[in-house]
Image 1 (cartoon, rainbow, N blue to C red):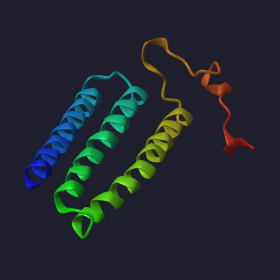
Image 2 (image 1 turned 90 degrees about the horizontal axis):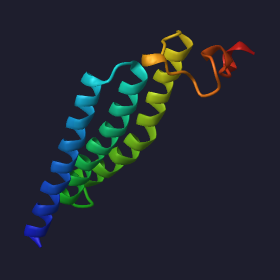
Image 3 (image 1 turned 30 degrees about the horizontal axis):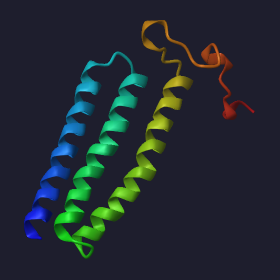
Image 4 (image 1 turned 90 degrees about the vertical axis):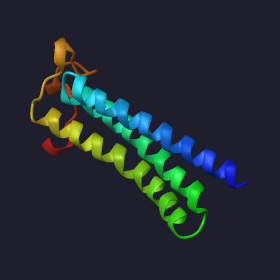
Length: 117
């Protein structure tokens, strides 16, 4: 049983490190804030969650393992919310897309802005 637990822990940490590496490459290589936000939020959420799940497998359901499990839940709630808020802030500040891309509804002025009501 201990060998299986160690193998699962190493596998979760390896998968997490891979996703964090992919997120870092996306941050360095992608052209604008929106693409970078997408790459880092998705990859970081999966990478950090995998590493935290590795901690849960290693420590078990009590103590540090429970803290790891709570951190996974907290991560899945806060990371998408934070990246959405940063993206909306960039849009409201007038940051353009790279390579002539545009907002789905047309120009950025056509996007519904609830603060203007």
